[in-house]
Length: 192
Image 1 (cartoon, rainbow, N blue to C red):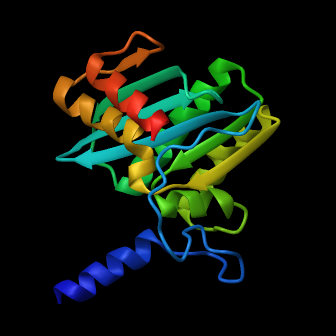
Image 2 (tube, rainbow, N blue to C red):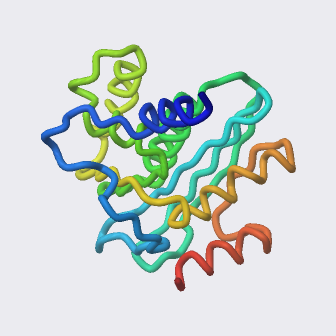
């Protein structure tokens, strides 16, 4: 029974809407670490964690050299499904990108379900799919936006930012003035 439940959970997490299209998740997973974006692009990594009726969000925006342009972590006391929390994190990151006034954007998340929904937003007729499509209307503000699924090891900075609100119970936005524990992860992320 436990194996069947795990299989169902994995099936839901990694469902692919269009089997003819190439899979978001490559057949052989390789932990590559954070990669610099293409020239003239800004890369934003997002993550969200749901734990005990609380949602924690982490967003980090970096330039082509890996320098942090801006980041944030947020905390909300509400019961939410993980995919809905990831969608809220995506919305936060699009708002952050709008404030940066960038025209070319790469969005990355370690949640394959979210990336699939965003890439197939015009085909998904579920309630969640409609909400994804509505949130993605903000994409019209950008010249070019790419959505990438990355493995969890490539999303360590956003993952760390999700753990800080649990500890600190607060919201925090920062540019280059961040704590040492964040600095170490940001630097290690870039030099892998």
